[in-house]
Amino acid sequence: MPELPEVEIARRFVRDRLIGKRVTSIDVLDSRMLARSSERSMRAAFLERTVDDAIRHGKNLLVKIGDDHLYLHLGMSGSLHMVDEDGHTSHERLRLGLDEGALVLDDPRRFGRFGLYHDIEDMLADKGLGPDALTVSDKEFVSRMAGRKSSIKPLLLDQGIIAGVGNLYADEVLFQEQLHPATKANAIARTDMARLGKRIRKVLETSISVRTDFSRLPEGYLLRDRREGAPCPRCATELVVIRVGGRTTVLCPSCQSQRAER
Ligand SMILES: [Zn+2]
Image (cartoon, rainbow, N blue to C red):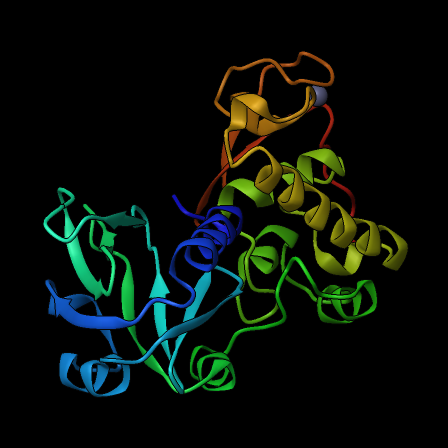
């Protein structure tokens, strides 16, 4: 499932392959995936305009075309492809013809979304997103997380608090910080919370650097083999699966013992 690192890689793909190209056609191939927009409004905004930037916030991608932005969310199974004029992928949902080739959003499961926003502020306000997990300062991270009564894992997944951490990376950072996912945020000292924020950035950057190929992650990463019964990379205890905040959670029962509430 595309998380922040996959979306960052998609952003760099758009930046490297699309900037300077002119949009010559727009085809919405699944209107159920349109977010707050119509094919007509997208055509009016983007046709004959030039792509000039690609911005990511959390798991959301905005492609600046002319004076407006194409919104792309990859959902559970979305991916972006450049194809020749007559080339196609298996599950095309949106196609942007360019003066050279075409950009295709392919999405077998159709949980992705696309549409039109004037600018990033519009998108942030509409979606109610918190600051981006990769660029948020330690101070802001701590002030947004510390003292809350909820368990830490659902807080990390709440895109309104911090945007960009998904289920897999939440498990990874909590494992690396040896925090039980059900630990209440108000039981975590501010210095430990600041360290967790740093850890998130480090893990996301590391995953981007290996292009999200988990087998290339450093030794000691949970995501190299995140499954029930796999050996903990730190202590070899068998990993267990529990549910926290309704989400499947993998942890080491030995390294991540639960702390008492304060
Ligand atoms: Zn362990």
